[in-house]
Length: 264
Image (cartoon, rainbow, N blue to C red; front, side):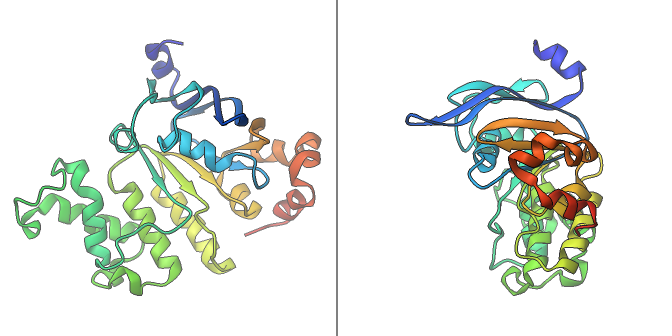
């Protein structure tokens, strides 16, 4: 498929026969996946299924053994993570990744600097960068941390730190967002609030999330990709994945019924 046809098809992200081996061990085994712009996709699968490796391939931390990843029709082959980020893809990690000794506001302002063309050169006084400051204030409200503006990030609760990381992740204006276990370590009530926050801040964006919590996945995703042993077992709407005997036998089992009963 040519770049033009890929763009006209509306796919924000495409994986084309994607494979990754470490030595003689093939971890990702020929995955094909096409995600339309604006769709929220949950990636699930048992431990060792290759979910994290898949994220690392998409975000450029790993290079593919063969196959390709297309972002808005452009190949990411050979691109470094920061180059992919500038092309419009941003990723949060399973481990909270913030600037612990900066305030909430300062963390978010750092997140927006590059997208506004400042490229981390501090030749101007930061206080005078009205556009960066205004955008940081806007993000702070979006992630419900406006009352914590001057709190040092390390003093936030765990859930607040995760919310701050979401803010940093979307600060650069990326249209494709990857979230790795966004609700890990949260209580049930924190998780419920966080799902709503993710929905709110990713409106109009393409979202991929790796998540073990079935309640989170079925409550958040428009479609679910099931990865088992490095292969794409299913890719469909949540109800169809719930109902798939093949998926249940391979992985989900009773957890599907649990999710259907309400989850988070």
